[in-house]
Length: 463
Image 1: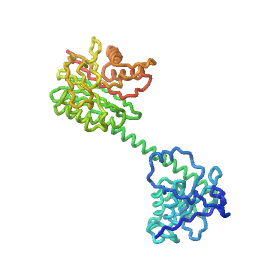
Image 2: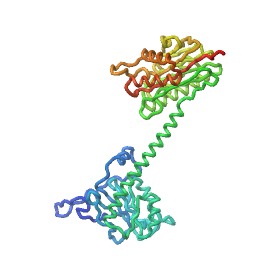
Image 3: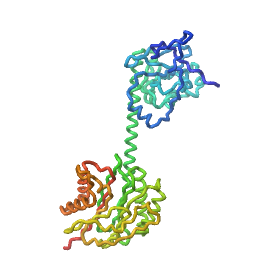
Image 4: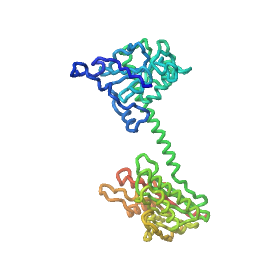
C-alpha cells in the first residue's frame, strides 16, 4: 500500500518566507524548499553534528512541523513570526507516516496534536478521526514522536482545560504544552522559540553531563592502571611522581613499577613508549604488567628483557614503535644492585657527603623493539649503606633552561638533585622539588611525559 501523499499547507509568499517566481506559462513556480527531498533525520548523528547543534547560533528561519488529524483540511495554526519578524514556515502531516517523511534537517520544532491516533490503534493507519492514544496509554503517540525525533523540540497540543494531560506530556519529554482552543500567533510563536531554545539547552546540558561522566570514568580507570608497589618487608622507602604530557590525561606512555621477591630482592623498573597517545599509554600498561609477572616468576636481566621485547612486538600497532627501559635489582642487604639498560637514561645515585652521579651506562643495550635477538648485559654496582636511587624518563631532562633554549640534560639534572639532596630533601619532597624546578626552568608545563621514582635506604639508628 503506497504511503499517503504529504499535504503541504498553502502559504502566501510572505508566510512561506520565499517569493514565488513566475513560471514561463504565467503560473507560480514550485517552492523548491518545501517540495525538495532531503534525507529524513534520524537519531544517528555524528559527533560533529552534535557539537554544531550545541555551538551554532539560534536559528532565525524557523520551520514548524504540525502533526494533526484534520480531515476537514482547516488549519489550526495562525500566522507565525520568529523573533526577528520573519515568517515561521509550517508543514502539516496528517499522520505519523507523513510526519516521518517531512521530518527533515531544517525542521526545528514539532507541534503534536495529542488527539492523533497512535501507532497500532484502529484509526492510526489512516487519516481518520480517531481520538486518544493506543490502548490505555494516552501519550503513546507522543512517545512515538519522541523516539522518531529525539533531537527536535516538541510542543504538545491538547484540549482546553486538560492541563493534567499536558503536564504529563512535559514529564514524558515534550518541551511545553498548549491548549488547542487558545492558540494565537503571538502565543504560539513565543512557545516555538522557547521550545527550540530549551531543547538546545537541555541537549547541551545532557552532553556536558555525559562528558563529565566519561571523564570521571576515564580518570578512575587510569588511576587504577597506575602501579601499587609491592614492598612489604623491605626496609627501602619508595616515592614516585608522574606527569603525563597529554592534556587532561592521567596516564601517558611512561610506566614504572617496584616489587619485592620472596628472596628479599627489590626489583625496580621505569620505561617509556615512544609517542604520546592513548595507544602508547595502553602499551606502557601492558609492558608494566608483563614485567611484574615475569619478575615474580623469577626472571631477571637479559632473559626478562628479551621476553618483554617479544610482548612489545606482539602488542604494538606499528613495527616502528619501540620502548626504552631501565631495570635494577637491589640485593636483600641493600648494598649492591644489578643494572640493565635498554636505550634508557642511567639512574642517578645520591649519597651523603659524596657528589651525586649517574650509574655506569657503558653496557646500555638497544631499546626494546628495535633489534631482533638483541642482548642486554647486566652490570653490578655498589650502592653503599645510605643512598637514594632515582630512576626517571627523558621528559625530566629534555625541558628547556630559561631563554637560552638549551635543554637541562643529565648533567644539569645531576647538579640540581645533588643540591636538593645536600639541603636535606628526601623521598616525596625531593621528587616534588626536582619536578617543580624543572618545570620552572622550562618556563611552564613540560610537553613530554615525566615519570620519576625514588628508592631510599636509610640504615637504622643504633641505640
